[in-house]
Length: 219
Image (cartoon, rainbow, N blue to C red; front, side, top):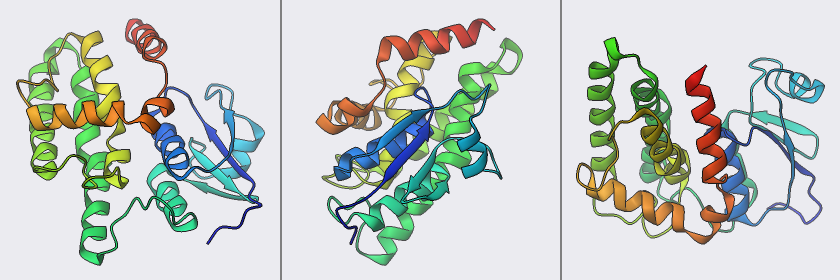
C-alpha cells in the first residue's frame, strides 16, 4: 500500500494519448501529482535522464524512481494504489486485459493511425485494415458497458485513443471509421468513456486537440 507522503511527477505531452493514459490512471486513483509538459523537439535534461533508452514520454517519476512506457506505468499505478482497481482479480481475466491492451498498441492503434494519415494511393487498404481492427475491438467489448465491466479498467484506458482521438482525426481526414452505424457497441462505449466524470476532466480540450492535428496534417 502506498503511503501518504508520495512524490509523483509525470513528464508528458498534452496531445499524446499515451501520456494521457497515465493522467487518467492517476486521476481515477485520486493521486496528486506534478505534471511537466515536454517539448519533444527540444527534450529536457530530465527526460533524457529519466528515459535514456527511448527518450520519449510519458515518464512517471515516483519518489525519484523513473518508469517509462504508458501501459507499464498504468499497471504500476494500479499496484501502488489499490483503490479503484484497474485490473481484474482473476488471473485469467488479468492476462486477457493485458493481451487486449497490448493488441491495441501493436495492431489496432497503428491501423487507425495509418488510415487517418495515409495518402490517396494507400488509403483504401489502410481504411480496410482500420475497420477490421475496430471490428476486432468491438467483439472484445461484447455486451459490457466498459472493457473493465461496470467500471473503467486497463483496456479502457489503453483505448483512450479510440474513445476520443479517433473522432477528431477522422473529422480532419474526412473518413468515417468509428460511427454509430458501423460499430454501434463500440461507439456507445466511446460515449460512455468520454462522458465519465473523471475521464471527461482528464481529457485534453477538443478544440485545441483538433487545431493541433489539423496543423500537423498541413505539414
